[in-house]
Length: 460
Image 1 (tube, rainbow, N blue to C red):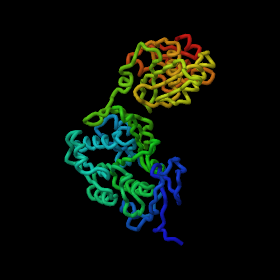
Image 2: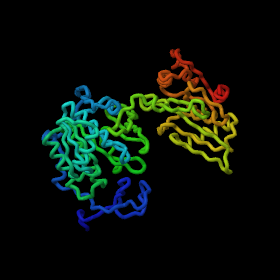
Image 3: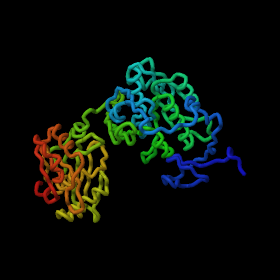
Image 4: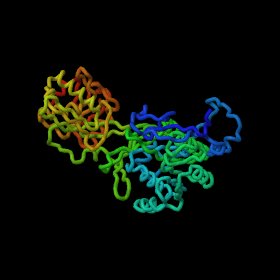
């Protein structure tokens, strides 16, 4: 029988999947040649005790409580000094919370956490920034571009999680940033840094520290090529909040999205612009999305989507042209390709548009990605406008879901979408007739109700 300490396993560098033997292709993420050999995790007695709360250990057996015996108190939140960041978190940083921030390399994860640490330190709070990737001089050079920091900002570099936990327990800062969790090494484990066992156990230690000492901890997570946080999926289940940074690295705008939040709404977003002096908030994303729009060109129309509780106006662009090949080309950017193909099939079947001999390109300006079906009506109108070469009125917006029979279905939060269009100067909105009850009290903007694609064709 082999010794457990001498056994090795193989884990995928892309997704963290573990295997007892080497595999050419990972069975989880299907990446080739990504399996790396590492010693099997073996937790020592010293490592098992790290990060535990002594008070909780001395309390003895847990006692179950009735629901009426539990006293509720207001959740203590601290502002980060960045309104968009606080919005995504649900109103501020909750005391004792564990927050995971993921995103592509260079997207701005470390920058936004360093900016939040700057504002918090200037407010008189104590911050411990633990970096396992950069040296002290590198971080100081980046910090100088952001401005002055408070006296409570301290920096610790190194890859030892035990050293970081010791400093946290000794100094008890108000907030801690771990950059990044894949570089931290738990001395009680024999596996390599970034392996599944290291990431899982290191996060568990930080979770016990956050809950036991009431310290808010932010951890930075690297992502795979598919956009998911590298390591075990259980990592996202362990933390209180999961934030993802999205955006085009060649562009200047970034979107911070909450996909999990135990203390607030999910799917909230914050919009930022990357500049020389760091990330700057975009307080009116709808205005930025519509800037530079071609108002007299065919194939352009504005729609309104809901990102959490925030309505956003976006421009849908379509280009339909005769194909030069026997098989027409379809391309979609920012919207689901299959959804666009479905809508074009409905247009050809229900209203007689001969799109089978035309190439079609659909794009959402600004680099946003939208998945909700409320954009169906705007996509269909943009395709019709480009096909017939007739521009849509620049002061008109449209939203609604389209069924396979060509009917226009109701959408959620219709009133908020209409009011957002009215605030940005639009005078007419095309809405589903099924939403007429929720729009009965709106008088300041012209509402055109449609029930099918035939109504849309008559309008255009």
